[in-house]
Image 1 (cartoon, rainbow, N blue to C red):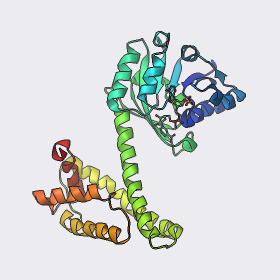
Image 2: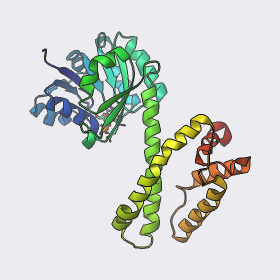
Image 3: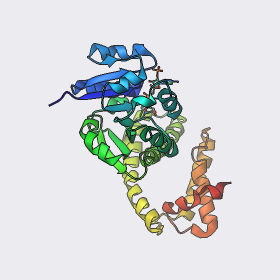
Image 4: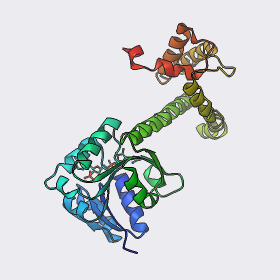
Length: 295
Ligand code: NDP
């Protein structure tokens, strides 16, 4: 069996862990980073550092990019000789981007004779290589099938679209939105309880986590309702929720806590109720999210 090779561009918090994971799986790992010193711990473990981006790309058939953002990716690919080094390579870009940026990068890279896979990492560095890490991919499906087993070392691969290289990015952003929404609510809950001086550990472990764990699975029903257009209230109509959320705002103010985390949800509920959706459930709010309703 030939030795397994991989190249990585970018050794930040995430890129370093990606490189380290490949080294642990006995890949000949070639790395490039703007700040060379970040490669030192990896070189000690057997990685090869290349000072030139094109040299790093030339070292392996599969090249993983994990840089800060799309601007940095484009700047890095624009260095002398880099685009001409891409022919025949499989480029896997795990940098967080927007869907349109992913599509543009796909065009740029494929126009130079490489295959392009865009990815969205659904994990933090400490979770890479564990069962709790998964990574979304879209783009060149045949190339993905060839490298899937290699990518699986980083986290469970989930290929979401061959037609649209931007789809992994869209799903990535949607999942982050779910996480930030849930965390925003949890932070607001912590601020309310913190204002009383009560134990936050007890509140978090004994009340908040069991409550959120019981409620989060309801998301699955919401998805089905949005898909079907039947916004069943399941016993909790929006008209009732509108009254309840007003109490949440009032309680926040009484506690000296900014209510801003709740404001968008309250606004959407009021819009929906005013438009005749008082008997619907939360899924009806998706209809109020079009930009045309918020100009
Ligand atoms: P870091 O900020 O730790 O690293 C950023 C990387 O980009 C470094 O390699 C840095 O090089 C490089 N970089 C920044 N600006 C430039 C520039 N102008 N020219 C060349 N290189 C540059 O970020 P992470 O490693 O954490 O994240 C990398 C990607 O992974 C991001 O898109 C992030 O959204 C995504 N991601 C990160 C997660 C995380 O929890 N960390 C989770 C999921 C995705 P240098 O070392 O020289 O500064």
